[in-house]
Amino acid sequence: MTTRVRRSGLLYANHEQAYHCLICFSAEDGKTHLIDMNGQEVHQWKYHGLPGEVINPTLINGKRGHILVQYEMLEERTFGIFGNKTVAEVDWDGQLGEQAPGGAARQNHDWQRLSNGNTMLMITQPRVIPMLGDVEVGDQGIFEVNPAGDIVWSWLAGDHIEEFGFSEQGLNYLRNILNNKEQDPWGYLELNTLQLLGPNKWYDNGNEVFHPDNIIISSRKGNFVAIIEKKTGNVVWKIGPYSNVNANPYYRLLNRAVPRPLDQTCGQHKPHLIPKGLPGAGNLLLLDNQGSSGYPPVSLGTYAGSRILEINPTTKEIVWQYTAENSGNPVWSFHTSFVGNTQRLPNGNTLINEGMNGRIFQITNSGEIVWEYINSYPGFFSAGKDTIENPMVYRAQAVPVDWLPEL
Image (cartoon, rainbow, N blue to C red; front, side, top):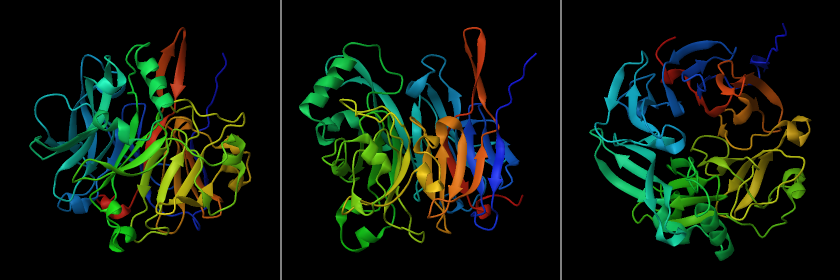
């Protein structure tokens, strides 16, 4: 009998240079895990989250170790963005704290607890969007709900198609897709981010576009990042879906010159403004997957690789970047085409989740890898007679120790 052993767990740790924290992530085993800097699990919740993230205690009256999870799945349409029935907040022991009653939440991809006690959820709504044809599609949007589950603010992407910057050629390409295939379980835009901008220097200097209550979203399939003005619902800022900078995919991956004008992003994840108090505060940080995407599809290079981009949102210039070459490796050795995220850490390091491979690592500003871990809690699925192991991690979160009960 032959046994294949997959690398997992802690691969490397430079404890002098790495930022010390805990890492939270939901895995394909259906649980949410919390590991320490030695790669050891210190806690788990029996629920999965999309994403699974610890809530900042300052938003929930000082309670520590609470997370938002997918509490119940619908019996029908359980795949993709349609299947989430109930979202719940659970405490450190996994006990139910808050649960919105009735209906189906259909939350997917992102959420955020607000300082007023409400929760913003990225949701799905099956509907016909006349601008795209007469076929029902999985439209995505944002609901702000109060603790009782009442919707107090809402926004749907399908009402703003003309604001996202698609060309007529791109819209026709999308229409043809929607009218010639079954409903896509991940939605025609596959929005993967919902984040408040939060306090930032741009707004402090008088730029209303960056009002802290405005919301940043990202479309994996549409190749755009946009800011929604909360008070009107209108798109007031965006990058993508197209770029007039050198379209050569090798240029995108191999050009190390910074600052330089932003070029084409492809299938990006978790764009957000770096919070105040952290190195690079106010800049836009994102994982540019360079995965197959776009209407029409963007050309990708043979030597596929992903990159981390830090962008000045007012000049739309790349001011810092990371590819595997910064770590002395071929560009293709860091690649996640469809999931993942990144996060700036207080000591200037950057946490990266190479999601499709379940690889989570920290780099210094120069690209030196100082901590590296591979998900030890894979899921499994059947493919014919074979059982396939799936280490995928949608999103990883660096968690300060003081957000948790004493361990």
